[in-house]
Image (cartoon, rainbow, N blue to C red):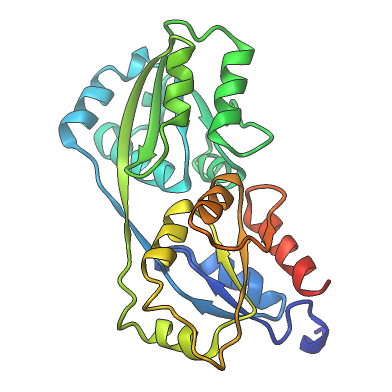
Length: 264
């Protein structure tokens, strides 16, 4: 057993802003490196599907050439409903699967399904570019599975390529009220060495709750880290500092950037 004092994040307080039910892997990885993890769930995610839209999509599912997932939540909630209706995963037929990001790809593979397209750079822009670049998308029919706050850049880019795009919202993201949460009180009093942002919605929530999260005079002011381009853009737009950014939009890459920054 290695000496905890030799671990790269030993003695560091790291704030994780993921929804409560999605922090386990983050906590495990950070604590393995010696960090003390502070959970500050700035957002909450819940299943939210219009039953009429879902019924329409599933009725004409065989006509889609591609299904695109933009997040792990999209994979989770879509397949919960798909299996509820069809019971057999083979009802997917010959549809091809495209994803944005490694975490989303992993969620698909956990269902023993193959990912047919994943851009090297995890962004909606890159996925659209690769789709259009590999084959003609003119009149191709595509289903984009997404959340209520996701940007329309992917859908817009496919529309420009004359693709027929249906958009299925399967979850909604909302801000968590932390004004009376003891975790927020701990953050205000003690601060942290770093705070990790993994989505534009978490950044927006942090900005909106500035009063509830204002640091006390003796609190450590954390460095702010971003998981990727869209999160970084949101931070800059709201005037939040970006002290480090993951080279790839993944937890491993973000933790690597965090470790490098704190031990520089």
